[in-house]
Image 1 (spheres, rainbow over the protein chains, first blue to last red):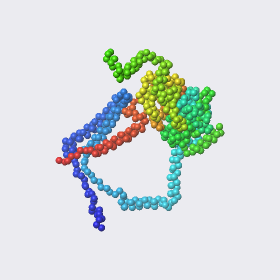
Image 2 (cartoon, each protein chain N blue to C red):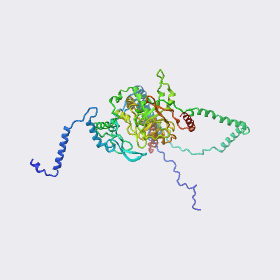
Image 3 (cartoon, rainbow over the protein chains, first blue to last red):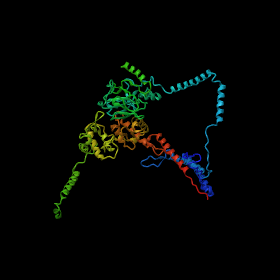
Image 4 (cartoon, rainbow over the protein chains, first blue to last red):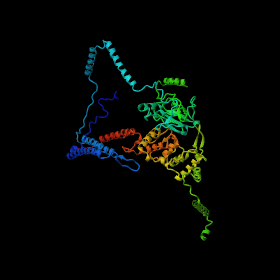
Amino acid sequence: MTDELDIKSHEPIPDPGLPEHQFRPQDIDPAQEKRTERHIAFMFVAAMVLFVGFCVAYFAIPIDAVIFKTANTVGWNAQNFTFGMTLGGGLLLIGVAIIQWAKKLMGDHEMIELRHPTGSSKDDIADVLDDINAGIDESGITRRPLILGSLLGAMAFLGLPAIVLLRDMGPLPHGHTNTVWKKGMRVVNDVSGKPMKPSDLEVGQLVNAQPAAFFETDEHGEPLIHGHDLHAAKAKAAAIVVRMRPEDITPSEGRENWGIDGILCYSKICTHVGCPISLWEQQTHHVLCPCHQSTFDLADNGKVIFGPAGRPLPQLPLGVDDEGYIIAMSDFPEIVTPSYPELARDQKKLDKKFGGSN
Amino acid sequence: MRKLSTKRRHPIAGLLVLAMGLVLTGALYSVIAPEPATAESASASEIEAGRELFLVGCASCHGINAQGIETKVEHDGKPGNYGPSLIGVGAAAVGFQMETGRMPMAKTAPQAPVKPANYSQKEIDQIAAYIASLAPGPARPSEEYLDWESVDKEGVAKGGEFFRTNCTACHNSTGQGGALPEGRYAPSLVGVEPIHIYEAMLTGPQQMPVFSEAVLTPEDKLQVIAYIKRVQEQPTHGGTGGGGYGPVVDGMFVWIIGIGGLCGFAVWIGMHGTRVKKQ
């Protein structure tokens, strides 16, 4: 067996040891050392000046002064720029000075730290196990199952308050299947509250619409719905009204009379996670949700044609009142909401309600 | 004269005479022909001049009577078109499309890009007069509704509400523009002329919806324009707006360039330091 290697006595590469120590200029030349010391001190002093400069700039520069303004750009805010240069510059100088100090003047010798095992010694392990066993013996937990069982029960029941608190963080969707829309309510332009006649809308039109109820006021001119109530109601009732060529629209059964000569109204709330959507392409009739790219075809009953949404956009049946303005003929027959697990059950209940009224 | 007569049978003499004749006719025509009417209402001669320009530059896609040209290739069960019908689009659509250089299109593409206008203002006005004469359509907006500097702060705030309700979905909340499916995009509104913003709302070019005068009134549109213009005047305190995306851009800048730069700086410090051989 002469071809076997004797690994112990034959290291393939000998330990090279540490390279010879190289000295810094500061170590051998006292003049250089003094000069470096002055450099570092200078940087600290410059930082002091910059910090004072910051305070001066804070009071001296008007808040809306602009610098570096050219014909094509609006320029930079002078105060912001000066704050950055003084405070940022001062902090940078302190950092650079400390690094210079450490690298050029502080102790400069190689150190070797040997590796050692990370595990505890056998004696330590035995001692700890003895302590634990003594504790178990003294508590008698193995001999008193009643105490052990009730302790575990108490810990488990501690989870109940947490569940109750988490459950109450937001309203559950049940019972919120309706919006403020109802039969006869006018469909008005958002922001201006202007009611619309079918002749006001052109092919390709998009109107971000709201129910007229949001613009009703009392005798003092104060809005009837306001504050948090307004936002909560708006988040469910917001709608988009679009007008397409009637021949482009393929209404599903029962929806033939939901539009007025190509004017259709859909919920603005995406059926995926409820983002408001109004990115409407008038030539493709697609409306796209900016959050996760769900795409709905409004010429085809709000069908999902792309993206993660699982249900078509709810559609609002439209009609015209005595004065010729566009009105809703009912609330949304489908629930306006992001999807949630019990949605199908709640929709069945809502269908029954609508089935009864029709 | 003798020299001229001896050269009269030269091979290029005929061409030279023809060229002289053409130049003379052209010069005479420019002197004799009546100037096109400059009045506000389009005169018959202006419409006729517009029709002639249309036949040369537009009819190949939009049809010789501006009725559009349908293709046989079906898209979603409907025929596509080379160019849509322009009957009823009005002068506003012509002004918007041609003054921004979108029309004539250089090539078929998902969307017509902005480029320098190919036609002079006079020619565009003539074509607009011709298209407007075909059927009633939106006219070009009057100066009264383009004077955005006259809008007060309350009006600018209202315009901002209209903008964020109707426009932000595609154009970004400060009008920086954004992407649409299949290679289309909502263009940036930075530096766009007020009249073109107005006409875009009025006519709904390409995929953009129409915002008719009856729903979004001229006063509302002026407020929207004022908001777009005023929001662009806001100083960018960091030196760049970063596309108007808000803190996302700031964060990306700090994490990638700021902290990345500091890491590189630290490595550079560690690698450098003067060493000498001891004397």
